[in-house]
Structures are given as C-alpha cells and as structure tokens.
Image 1 (cartoon, one colour):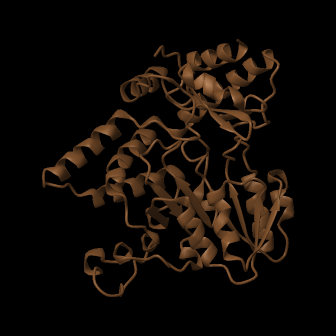
Image 2 (image 1 turned 45 degrees about the vertical axis):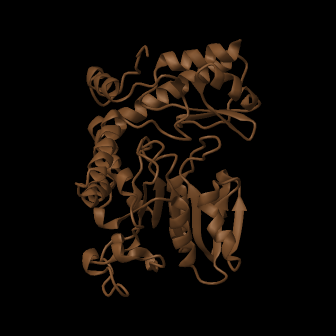
Length: 361
C-alpha cells in the first residue's frame, strides 16, 4: 500500500506513520471500519501465541489479559477501572440496563437507532419507549423520562449526537443516560464518566477481536442488578465457583460476562497500541481523510448525509455500487441504499482517491 498519511496534530508524522506501517498491511482498500476494524499485527501474534500455548497444554493467564484490557479502555475513556465491566456484546449490556427499569418507565431513543442499543427496551413490553429524530433528543427529554438511550455516532450514517445537550437535558429532568459508543470509542473525544452507562463493542474503531465489549457504570453501580452473574462476578472469582456467589465484586466487575479469553489476549495489545498512538492523532487523521472524501464527492455532484466531525461518510443513492466496488478491492458498506465509507488510522489519502476515482467511472 502506498502510504500518504494526513499529518496528525498531536505528534510527529514519522512516529504515527512508522507505527501504522508496522502494525497494518491491508491487501484491499479497506474503508469499512464501521463494520469491522482491522486487527494490528501485535494483536494477531498475541492471539496466535495464546491459542498455540493452549493447544500444547501450557495455557497462559488470559484473565490477566482481561484486566489489562479493562485498564487500558478505562484510561482511553477517562474513567477508573472500577467503573468498567468486560463482556462480549452491547445487546447484553442494553438488556442489563433495561432490566433495571421499573414497569412503565419511559425510555427516549433516536429514530433508526442501532438494534442492539434499543431492542431490549422494546422486548420488555412494559416500558414506554418513545422515539424521536436524533437532532431532537435533547429537546424531547421531559419530566417522567427515566432513561435516554442513544448512540454517540450513528451506525447508518455517522451523525454525531449532541451529547453535552443530551446530558444537560437528562440532568435537568432527573433522567439517566445510556450511550452506545460502538461507532465512537477509538476516535471521538469522549469522557465516558459524564454519563450513567456507556457500552461499546471493541471490534470496530478500537480494532480488537470480536468477542470484546465494555460497559461503564456509575461509581455507585447505577442501581443495576447483575442478573447474569456467574462465578466471574465474585469478589474472589476462584472462591465463587460452586453454589450461589456469596460476595459479588465490589466494582463494575460484578457485571462481567464470562470473557472470550482468546479475544482478550489480543484486545489488550490493540488498546495498548491506541494508547501509544494517541486518540488526538487518530481523530485528526481520520477526520482529515473523511473531509477529503466529502470534498471529492462534491466535485462529482454527490451530497453525503450531513455528519460534520465524523469519520463515517454515508452517500445516498450509491449503495447499489457496493458489490462492484468490492469486486475491485474497495471495501465499503451498503446501508439502507446509502454507500457508507469509514476512515481510520490505517487508511491513506491514496485510499480516498481510489474510491473517488472508482465512483467517477
């Protein structure tokens, strides 16, 4: 791949480029991070080592990998590790939050929100789920709203929620906030501690393996009941293997799912790389590439869905070209008829220009 990187504002260009070159070597023009991120070489190597050690009968301590990943994610999102639960699925954590609400509670969500963020609230059947356009979320919080559930960035088109306004409106009316950061953690300037609950998968912008997710809860654990608690949720897990867990973890670890250990063996290295590069550098790089693509689209007569400040660009009416682009080695998505391109740290200006050239033909 011909690497022409956008200069990051927070660090020397050569360090950024050197790290990315050493960790990523895509063989396609991969612009589909909003579906699945690419794993760095260090992550793949760590997983291979863990699998081979297990096959040879000398497994490593992969529970230590879970703790390292938890701590790294906590630093990236500016919260204490004691507020972070480790799991595998956003839907499971949405279900945990949904289970905590009293009968008849009102949940405010955005139109066309990602299914995992909202379905458990609908499944309960005894909650009042109210749906409004994303841009009206903050204005729609009212007395009696118990929870606002919304993605920080929309999966379909990259639009970013007005999180400060949502937080302020929720505080004014005594509502809790539940933010799905799956399309934001890894590039957005995001303080998870500012919200009641934050969930995210890690296989997108955090470029971890599938099977890794995190939940951030308040210091007081947010009145959540650990309805799926198993032995791993004990304060002393290895003393909690038989019979009911007598003492749940005093931290968010009481909400841990039994971890996909091989995935976490890799995840700790992906998150460490992101810390090494720095979110500011990643964000500057990603957004510059997205802006280059938007500028190029204008010259071709196409107008993307307005999503300023987002590395996800969705172009109405071009989704049908996804198979053709895929056959040409350009990986993008078709979402509701829109062509969705997502730009991340392993992408280059050459990638942007190749997609634009393909769309112009």
